[in-house]
Amino acid sequence: MINKNFLHYFITGTNTNIGKTIISCALLSEFKKRGISCIGMKPIASGAYLNNKNKIWFNEDVNLLNKYSNSLYEFTKLINPYLFKYPISPYTSSNLENRIINTSHIINCYNYLSNLTDVIILEGIGGFSVPFHDNENSADLAEKLGLPIILVIDLKIGCINNALLSLEAINSRGLKLIGWVANHTQIVDTLFANENYIELTKYLNVTPLGRIPYLYNLNINLISHYLDFSSLF
Ligand SMILES: Nc1ncnc2c1ncn2[C@@H]1O[C@H](COP(=O)(O)OP(=O)(O)OP(=O)(O)O)[C@@H](O)[C@H]1O
Ligand SMILES: C[C@H](N)[C@H](N)CCCCCC(=O)O
Ligand SMILES: [Mg+2]
Image: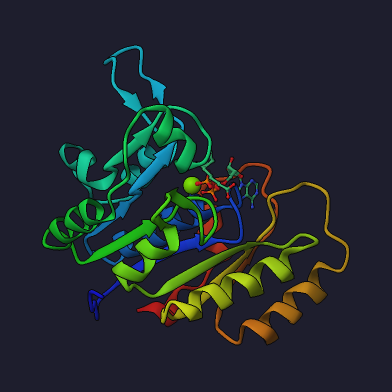
């Protein structure tokens, strides 16, 4: 396991599509504001779109992370070593392209980037444990990286089970959950969301970094307003 004592974090979530990228961007913009060099890394992204102007395939998460980093676009191949066309599981998307996700390659990219910046915010794919192929999954990658984990939770019904199973998996890998964020990705209010938040705070037993309401006009500055990252610095 790589031992990193500095400001590198692995952002995971209780599921896909629950706010990992926007929260990673808010974290990056906080570091940037403080004059600390930072890079957002998305080692595996599924869902690629062709830019009609430059004819380059891109992924929205990678572009957003780049936008809020001090990252240099020439490092995109290191920031995002694996980009797959279809917005589906990495197992199937890599199979469809006859490619194999190699976590050693990801670690090499991460190590290279570590020499260029103080901060790396590394966004996982989907939830904590997503297969890459028969021998490895995203939890294996997290374990190899050995970074402190931030868990994003969409505060909807069912999230308590998802969060506690994620915590169990994180702990079983010898990793440390150092913070979590409660998000609301749906317009409709979850019944007793406050109670869920309190229950999660109790059972996760780790600092909540904030609670983001559903935002009609979502922007990263606004998200930062609901987050307090001071425990991370
Ligand atoms: N609090 C919020 N209010 C409104 N929309 C939100 C909120 N949080 C997230 N979203 C929207 O939900 C979608 C998913 O967010 P995001 O892309 O950050 O999720 P993710 O966990 O990174 O997804 P993936 O697993 O695909 O990487 C985005 O369109 C985002 O703008
Ligand atoms: C397409 C999506 N937004 C992500 N890029 C991939 C999520 C993979 C989830 C796999 C799963 O747990 O079912
Ligand atoms: Mg994302």
